[in-house]
Image (cartoon, rainbow, N blue to C red; front, side, top):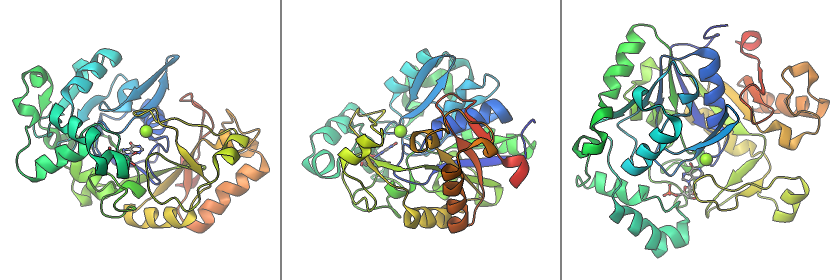
Length: 343
Ligand code: IMP
Ligand code: MG
């Protein structure tokens, strides 16, 4: 089906507190729609995007999950913080170094930032950060004291001008996928401050992270999990007791930190705000199989159990945006793709 109904610049953003399954969705979209470029946006290596490909599980913190499609150029936008060690490790893990470009303006996380993030009673103790140094590195950046990727010799072979590459592709009417990280509830501006990450995480900032202006964005796909999870401290209105989550069979651990995730039911109020502020044009629901018996691996809407369909329809009814992709399992092909019907 080629690129389907999606337009040349599509942003994938998280609608909850991160870990919505963006990696899986980006993996599916890239294999299916074959973008020229997948550009990673978001805060930095505090994010862990999981994608299962070729029988292997990848938990990527810096490289775009779009690496699963070998035809895609992989970029890390200038707004993103980088830890050179993590970048190099993932180049090795994915074997995708030939296709990778890192913007020279990415600010660099140094060991002192990590140390500070891990020992600060406020950051690690109260906020429950990932301890990856992102907050302190963004402080350094705002203080005009950060080192930039262009100064790191080990990264020399990857250095590029991401906005230029993305702009050239868009002018040539090529499909560019922007892979956002974190989630709406973690936004420094719109989230549950002070229990948030060190930057805005909404689609406008994701676009700015890779150098795409607002008038060049065609589609914003907002990703929601069928339930909600949160790692670290902070308000969580729909949280359920751990025992209840266990009874439902939902036990998750963070990709980056290994911490057990708090679990709750779908939060319509949070979702409504996320739809509005991200300017969502399409919604994606992931992990449907974990919530509804009989939906595992289903690939057509009509074959979903009635309660699962009612749930999707309730989401569409309340949020007034079409649910176009539904994930029913961890493998990339476990997706119900409704784009040709609904767009
Ligand atoms: P920081 O981003 O490491 O400063 O952590 C601040 C808060 O954001 C903590 O609650 C983290 O658990 C959370 N956080 C940051 N990035 C992610 C993510 O990619 N997924 C889930 N939680 C995240
Ligand atoms: Mg994650």
